[in-house]
Structure formats: structure tokens, C-alpha cells
Amino acid sequence: DVKVTQSSRYLVKRTGEKVFLECVQDMDHENMFWYRQDPGLGLRLIYFSYDVKMKEKGDIPEGYSVSREKKERFSLILESASTNQTSMYLCASSTVFSGGRGFFGPGTRLTVL
Amino acid sequence: QKEVEQNSGPLSVPEGAIASLNCTYSDRGSQSFFWYRQYSGKSPELIMSIYSNGDKEDGRFTAQLNKASQYVSLLIRDSQPSDSATYLCAVNRNTGNQFYFGTGTSLTVIP
Image (cartoon, rainbow over all chains, first blue to last red; front, side, top):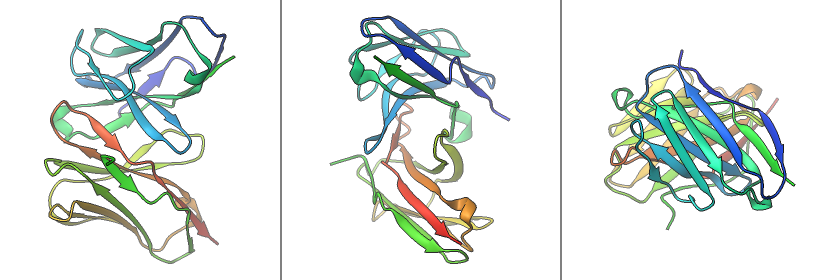
């Protein structure tokens, strides 16, 4: 089975802190994604990557950056956390050989105080 | 116009009934379509994928795709209380490998 893991299930940070969220997948997937999920807004794509060191902006990249130095790892960085970044963050991966099916990690619930 | 639209619900059906969940999408070039189930407090889990017009059945689940009408649906037969969850429709254009998600439909199956 595909396994996507995220570094933390729950995280509490203070405004202005730099925050790192890490995601690791074990199925050699080319594509990795970061979403945030908020009530009434659904899943919104922050960034995605289709190869090592490659990244593309999603719908809401402002205030975020990403890093993909190795194929299995995709990191989301909040340069200076703000209260409006309090959310559930979900990482996903997929391979072009599976018809685009995506697999999600368990999520990180981030609270910024 | 949103890429993917779903009725937010909530949708309530009695146990044993058929639950029907609907989704429309805006990009005619979309190629792949998915239904995810998300239990409260959990991450989305893929339950169905469909790529060509028509019906695709998997157990109690049937996905239906009509590309001319830009419409995807999910039928759940013999609904069970364990089916109570939010169902997310997702569309992949195959360009840029992006998935576009609807906001989800909340389903409650009443025992």
C-alpha cells in the first residue's frame, strides 16, 4: 500500500514564526502536492511538484514556499506564520502511471496563535 | 465559475437506500475523475476513479461520467451508517498534473 506520512498531526506556533511541514511518500511517486482544507472552502492547492527541485504554484501560494530536494520528500514552509494560516494541511502524492490517482497523508492541523 | 462544483448538502438517506452524489466540472479538457471519501477528522481516501463515459461499478459504488454534460456522479447502493462522511469530487486535467476538488457533499445515513 502507498504510504504518505506527515511530520506532525498537530502543531501550535506563534505569529511570525517560521514553520516547516514535511511530507514523505514511499511509492516513488513523481507528483507531490500541498493542500489546505478549511470549512466551506474545501481543498485548496498551495503548491505542487512533479519532479525533484521542480515546483509549481497552486491557487493560494502567497505566504508559503516549498522544497523538494529528494523525490520522496516535499516540504511546505510558512516563512512568517500568521493567524489566517491556521488550517488543516494535507499532503498528497500521485504517479502518472496510475491514471492520476492521488493518495493523501493524515494531515497536520496547524494553529497559529 | 469554479472548476468543480458539488452540492454541499447535507444529504440524508435511510439505511439501505441509494445515495446519489453529483458533481459538475468546467474544463472540457478534463480527463480523469475521482471520488474521495473523508471521515470527520481524517484525510481523504480514494474510493472510485473513472476515465471514460458510462458507468463503473465497484461493489456498492457506481461512478457515472457524462463528458458531454460535464457531469460526474456517485451512487451508493444499500447505504450503511458507515458510509456517513463527506464525499469529494476531484478532476484531473492531465496538464500540470493538478487535481481540482469540489467542496464536498456531506452524507448522513440514518439507521
